[in-house]
Image (cartoon, rainbow, N blue to C red; front, side, top):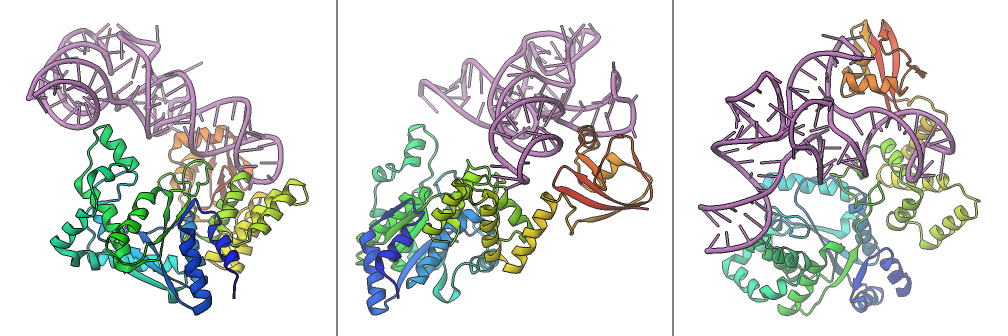
Length: 401
RNA sequence: GGUGAGUUACUCAAGCGGCCAAAGAGGGCAGACUGUAAAUCUGCUGGUUUUUACCUUCGAAGGUUCGAAUCCUUCACUCACCA
């Protein structure tokens, strides 16, 4: 078994804020003493999931709770998704049809069960209970709260003061999310720091509805993306997806700055804080090269989402390309009709967006054929097989006929 | 509905008749240096084998002019103030 103190410490790791630590302690004690399970809830968008490491910070925390007796209530917000979460940007969204939702749910499972234990996870759709509420139920829900308090919320407040529109349906979002907690009798809810208001709403509503529970709330920070500044997101293209192939994943982790590496260690690694501190100390006193520390992390993560073997291969491959400056073993192959101008060929195989761009890169010495820098901008490729390279990362094998 | 301001390249933002493919910053790409990065320095950043040239771009469509991102007209959208 485990010690409550240790469990609490592990739970609090990396969190931005915990509300009602006492409750968590009680739940853990009840599990330890009587084997009693409890419910930990987290909600997700119903749109097509493409999870990245930013999401996994939260999901890993859910997995941790499973280790300590929790049943995870994994909610797909197919109803609330229609409104659009006012946290951050807002645009009223269309309701996704049943088929799409089912498909997305399946995709969620594939990705999420790389971390979560399926036996201790319930996948739930909130339209199931919200649609049953009906008009009167909804009305009742709205009486539990008032506009003034809604407007206390920072983003509403900002928009109200600056006279930006707030749709009434947006007021419903936190209420409905809170109602999820009422219906499911959740004991703990996890979410990002941006979700604070919504998370606390669950607590409030549980009290109002007399569920005899007031969920504890745990907020996880938003993980920084590879640029080290903005939060990780797909649109900023600073993310590492859980579905990325091992080599890409490895390379992306390694491309994080040294500073960022420690943040990733804290939030993504399963190493204990002591172990991490140890590594850090070794890097500081010079006994461990920072690159090796980063490699360890990259290997751990690739192993988690693929396997150990592939992680080793990814590592070897990476070092092959970067350290020994060799050509990656698995590169795309193209066939072209020769003779062909080098710039044209680069465009044809999509290594360059335009011949102008290709010319520029050739002039700058960024283009190599069979590891040899191309000096002549007018170079024609005649028959044969060549390895073309632009910069450090882009490769292609070309067969000219 | 009225009045005023605006709409420029990936983003922000100068330009306000010719020297404008359009300043500057950010981002991106590349080179050097490294540990793969970060930091730093440098170059590039609409297209085209006529590359000190040509073609297309400054919200859209017309117009004035030898010449328009720049002036005029209409339209669309955004913002501010007033109703």
